[in-house]
Image (cartoon, rainbow over all chains, first blue to last red):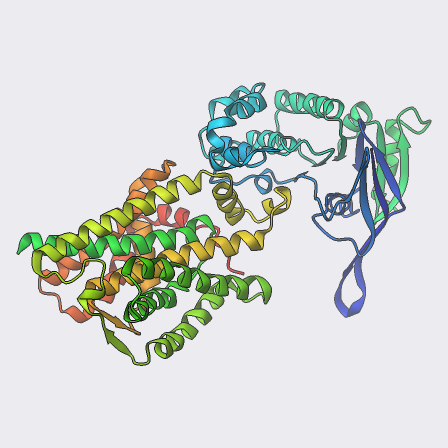
Length: 247
Length: 294
């Protein structure tokens, strides 16, 4: 598989016709089974890149194409799930945990669509198997979950769609040590088992060096570095320098 | 006499309960502050009286009325989604336009509905009131069953999810516009159905009968949702929305029986709602939170 983002660009107009922000990326390609970290200071266009890749926003320039085996599609035709920074944005808070999981169940038949609760119980149970707290609160509205539990659920529902691309936007921000450890492991498993490519936005340098196979550094809407694991610059001091705010 | 009045009250309560369920769909599932019911309620009544005058049987006429109401809901949805009219304004526009359209349809400001054109037929007195109540109970049960089953299908779940969080439309690969159309069509179809039933209770259609209908439905819905106190069982929720509307009508009925002048009934509606808002601030704020205003 290849996810190719061919020269993505997006311009936002400011006052007096002067563009307030320009995102201008070279052509990038991503492979299956890899975890890519997207890093950069605030306002460098990380989240926007993610939204363009996921097809939530249309680029002014370029297009995102996905090829999987002999299937090809553009991400604006078939968007892929994004786990957004605000966990609430990924969930319907008035629906129960179970209903949120059912919403994203992939490949269901007509009868399963008509009575999703009856047949897909197994699907729901296997998804929350490892997460005891969510398992206990299966029939409670998501509004009653804590911030970390919402984050965990947001990740779980998004992986339910078995999309070959998983976009994660600082999704570990509100989780405790144990949950974030669990989720990190689940990202790795998902990437290998589906197989999929995970693109993660993060500010955590040590996490990036530990988990990522590739790190993209962005600054002011431009790609300033594209590092692969094992490259000579794959170290903390280089990343800290790259992420520093001084221009 | 008491039984006759009680069955009249229950009948009216059920009609407004059905209306409240329509309002509940737009306000709670879709989170769309829809004011179209002011127009679609009368449209239901006008449509029904015209169809029966043309010789169509009452049951078929009621079904067509539902479709008529649904199409009015679609107009509001189209205004909101395609030309970006804010939700409240779209509803106001359509209900204002419907006022004239109903008048044009009817050809005169009001119309007597012959008892032989109603579901019950030419019966009078207590028998009539009880037959009406039986019909309304039947329709109410069918509607509650439908909503309970629908709300738990994948499409129902999506409707409720997208209504609350429009970002989910992207993640679920479905069209938000489509679901707003569907939700408003369902909601206004039910409202038009309530209008058709109301005209059979009052044996008349009046183009002014829609004024303040949305707020009546809203009062029923808010009362109903206060009764369930955030419980999740859809059967309970639907039934208590029905019950809420019934309670609201009962309050007004008792006031009128106690000698409050008849002209004040909308004032009473407003007062009931203000009292509810006053005494249950936190809960009502919860119920009406996160409505989509654009």
